[in-house]
Structures are given as C-alpha cells and as structure tokens.
Length: 567
Length: 70
Image (cartoon, rainbow over all chains, first blue to last red; front, side, top):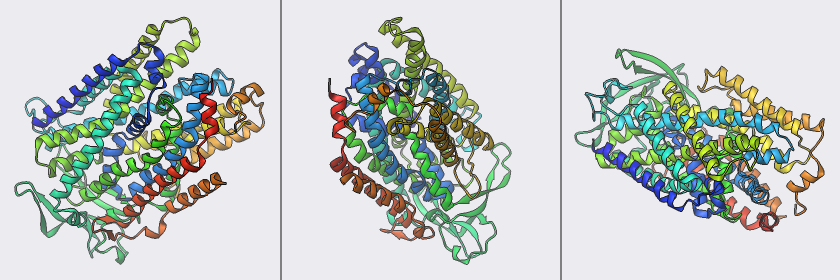
C-alpha cells in the first residue's frame, strides 16, 4: 500500500508542474505549440531524450534482454547513439532553420511548402496518426504491466482477477492506464509544449536517477557487482538450462541451488562449446525450450525461445533508428529550440544518456534469467525484479515512479503533437488562418487531444498483452520507411511531389503487409532474419528516386527557399 | 576537408558497430560486464566524441546565419 501512495504522490507532483507551466503560458497558439521558440540546450536535450526513451527503453529493453540477452544493447541502443546524433545534426538543425525562417509549426506544413502540394498533407496526416498510435499504446500498456506486480496484495478483495495469480490485489492495468492517461492529459492540456518540455525534463531526470538507484539496489541484492555476473541462467554439460541461484526473501540474500534448478533445455543440442555458457551473455543464436504456467489452470506448457541475435538481424536493425528523422513529435521539439546552438548538447550527450539508461536495463534483464521463472511476461521483468530484490516499499514506489516518468515523458509529446498537426494541418489549413481566434485554435487542439487519449486508452485495453518492445519496433519501422522522404526533401533538389507521394504509399503498403504477416505486432523477420524495416525503407527509397526522375520538380522559387545560396 | 574526415569517421564507426568478432564471447570485463555489452558501451562513448568533433569541425554556420537573419 505504501508503494501505491508514493506513486500517487509522484503523479500529484506532475499535476502541480502542469499548473506551474500553465502560469508561464503566454496564451498564444504559437506558445502552446512550439513554446515561442524559447527552449535552451538543457531543456532540449532532456525533452528530446525523454521523448525518445519510453516504456520501450526501460520496460522493453529489460524484457528483451531477458528474452534474447545482451545483444539487445547493440541492436537498438548503441546504433541509436550513432544514428540519432547524426539525424539531429543533419536533419534536426536544418528543419529547425527552415521552421524558424518560414514559420512552420508542423512537419506537414514543411512538406506542403517544400513540394508545393496540398494533397501531400492529407495523405501524410492519417499515416502519421496511424504510426504514432502504436507508440502511444506501448506507454499505456507498459504502465499497466509495471504497476500491477509492485502493488500486488494491496487490494485483495477489490481486484480479484489479476493478470498472473501472484499479483492478486494489484492495481489492474485498466486502472493504471486510465490514471496515467488523465494525468498526462491534464498537464499537456494546461501547459502545451512548454508544459511538456518542463514535465519531460523533470521526468527524464527522475527516471535516470531512479534507474541508477534501482540498479544499485539490485546489484547489492545479488551479492555485489562481481557476483551478479554469475547469476544468469547457464547451459550445463547435458544441454539443460539451469539456474544456479535463487533469492531468499527472508534472509535477503542470494543462495546457491543444490542441485541447480532445471528450467529448460537446448533444442538440438550438438554444440559442446555451449557447456557452461550463460546464453544471455553472448549473441550466438541458440533455441531453448522452456516451460511456463498457464495462469488460470496452473498447467505447465512448453514454449520455445531463440536467445541471441542472428547477425543479419543485427545489421539490418540499423534501419530502425532512422525513424527519429520522421517522428512528428520530435519535429515539434526541434522547433521549440531557441537557436541552432541549442542542438549542440543534444548531439553530444544523447548517446551517453542512452548508455546510462540502457546498460543497466540490459544487465538486469540478463541477470533476471537466473532468478525469475522463464515464462514471466517480458514487459513485467523489470517490476518483478524490483519486487523480488528490493524489499523497501517506499523505494519500490520511487523506482516505479521512475518507470512511469519514462513512459509519461513520451506520451505527453505525442499527444500534444497529434493535437498540433490536426489543428494546423487539417482545421486551420482548410478554414484559413483568420477564421479562428487564438483561443479557439487552442481549444480545437485540446479537444482533439482528448479524443486521441480516449481512443488510445480503448485500443491499449484491447491490446493489453502485446509485447512492448515488438510493438515499438513496428512503430519505428513505419517511421523509418518514411525517412527517405525527409532526407530527400532536405538534400535532393530533384525530389518531386509525385515521387514523395509514391514513396509514402510504397512505405505504407509494405509496412501494412509485413505488419499483417506478423499477426499485428509480433516479432517478425524475413528470410534469414532481415527486419521488415529494411525492406520497407528500400522500397520507399527506390520508389522515391525512380518516380522523381520521371516527374516534374518543384519551381525554382521553392527550391531557392529550401536550398539557400549558403549551401 | 574537415567535413570529409567527420563523414569518414561516421562510416568507420558504422562498420565497427558490426562486431561479429565478439559474437560468441561471453567473457566478463571488470568482473561483471559481458564482452559484447562492454564493447557497445564503449561504442556509445565513441559516438558522443564523434558528435563533439562534428560540432567543432563541421558546424553549419551558414545555415545558422540564414535562419537568424531577418
């Protein structure tokens, strides 16, 4: 119960921050949408980093490392450090410059002007909404999965249908999702993009500090940093996967299992080199059969899991971080920058911030393989580790607040961004700039945000068992398939309206095809392990180039606007 | 010239990311970090240094001036 009070206290603090940012709100739509271009280097770094690191970074990375091992870090984190920083430098600063010069507030305004095309905006709008929604879903699903285990036992007579038997009485995902949605909605409603930037900065600091505190406590509970390395599950001489240790909650220490507890077996065990290997600590693929308990019947059923990462998958994953170039919410954050210099800190510090958050999460996920049942749902691994290893309820509350902070610092920007593009690119664009007063514009944006929050909540409840990491990868794949469009818009004069529309359609069609093949959000690879993002990206890029070369480029006047003589 | 060097370093880093040579090495560095993870943590630091170099030697001053001019 104490844990729950700490979490509620944190949510109240966020609401107070919303009220505070509302007092700084200048009352204009420009202030609501892009904070009057007033955000400096530190706030920009925190809001950009906080936005890109969501449930995916904490809950998803820990769960994925539990499933596949430490290869998770190279797969997403270190390549993101390289690709994200390059995109901030090559795309972010350039878009900020054009946004400031020509008064753009949204991505769609930029594309419409760059390609002299009204219809491009109407095509892009539903696609951007379609792709942002899975991103929103992972936040709400991730929050629900996190709170239920850490509040287990708080209300045993009220919440009697838990997701897993051991979480009886925990706050159910539907209630967590509802509360988180309402809190984020409140401070975005009040403070707009400035409120989101303040809340993001506060929450990013909270989740980074809490992440490190959690890491320290987990290490101590596992018997110190050097002993933690012995904890992950091991393959023995017979090809059986064993856990050598268990955590004794009464003595609050790690104790050796005598004999080691068998939790799985290597499928087709032929490789003698696998003996005594901790498969979560290397990246060579190995298929293991585990058993998991069916929550309702208690029956044990076998399931297979491939640990490690196929090399071709690792290489083709580089396409996924390209998505940041097309995130509409990141575009909006870039435009809040006071000057180009505000980007410098983000370019340098972003890879380090990723490292500070991801390395501990990936290690905790790998260590979890040695003390948690293998059948536990991956998104619940982080909170299950906290619950098992950190006894203090206040501390668990604070650490869980840190996880919620990471989740909400992305949700706010995404909600705000959808409200912004709907208002500016659809409503004002159709009605004309002078039809509505500033107050009415802000009201329209806020109303659309309410609709999107409600829709997202309903969808999150329908997809409550989805894998947070895999769903996020689908969202990123869609945006990365659109990356050729933004890159060509900035660096290729010959890109045309028809080329861009054809490229967007190619990206969407290929993405929808593979998304359908995956069973709508599961892990899916093509052939020897190629990620669908690679194929979608290549299809979009080739289409863009071919169609552009056969169609008429924009006028010289437009090209002069976007390719100034300074180049 | 400096821009070419920065781009070359970017390409070198991209290839260094594909560290197939550690793929089946689970040795622990400093007693707790698996080799594959320690290497990629170092890679993140290298990315940050490359970012600093890019800002120092390839900053788009002209674009900045273009955006700021009235």
